[in-house]
Image (cartoon, rainbow, N blue to C red; front, side, top):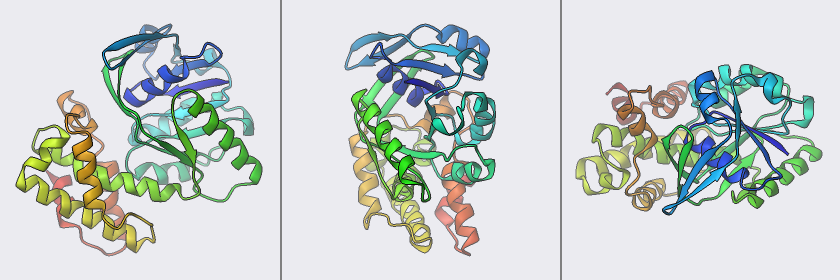
Amino acid sequence: MKTVIIGPGALGSLFAAQLAALETHDVWFLDHDPERAKSLNGKLLLTIGGQEFCRKVSASANPADIGSADLLLLCVKSRNVAVALNDALPLFSSSSSTLICFQNGIGHLDILEKLKLPIEPVIGVTSMGATLIEPGHVCHGGQGLTRIGFLGQVPLEKQQKLGSVAEFLTDAGLPTQCVDNILDFVWAKLLVNVGINALTVIFNCPNGELLNNPEAKKMLAAAVLEGQSVAKALGINVTEDPVSQTRAVCAATAGNISSMLQDVRRGRQTEIGAINGALLAKAEELGMNLPVNRDLVER
């Protein structure tokens, strides 16, 4: 199976490294940056628990170099989804390709709907942990389950094919499960991100430190509860106690630097708009006021 990872960031690099562990897997990066693609072409370094493994991964900025793909994993930021998919269109092999989109927040959902792609996109939500040490070197940050699913009803044939994709990913060391209610999991992860990411930037700290700061801990709970109120208004089925869930994630990833704080430290644009900002947009559509999340966005 030829797999193309669009975006060589932390998550994309982890997926590539895992899939490339088997010589029978043809794994590619599609990168918008030709110079970076050139430097990535041929190898990828994976660190797991102090051990390093070298994986063979091809890379290019030109889809023509890659050809049609069986599986595409979209691992770019939400703000780059439209451009990345337009660039990747030559990789689609009519209806035989499978596209799985891994983005934080909910901002990408509206973008995908507007694009009118030639195939039905699959939404992915993963709890796999990864940190990009530098381009071409990724550190495995923790094992977790990946869930994939269509947003709407699809023919049985497509459901069965997605099941085969889940088996393929699982066999590559990426435990994956097909679900019918992927939107519930998208929102569950959104609430966790709403409660953690922006606050780690404001307090400039690893995830776990939020639990040791009374002010941060209070703001975390308030932001998550606001998000839960929007989810309920939209008919989304989320856990009854998302605050405890978010705190549990903080504790489990205590030493981790959130992706948003990593972006700030590297001088990059953050995903505040796709996470807290997108939540605010949904709230405004419903006539709801979210003062804590608005404060997080405006800071």
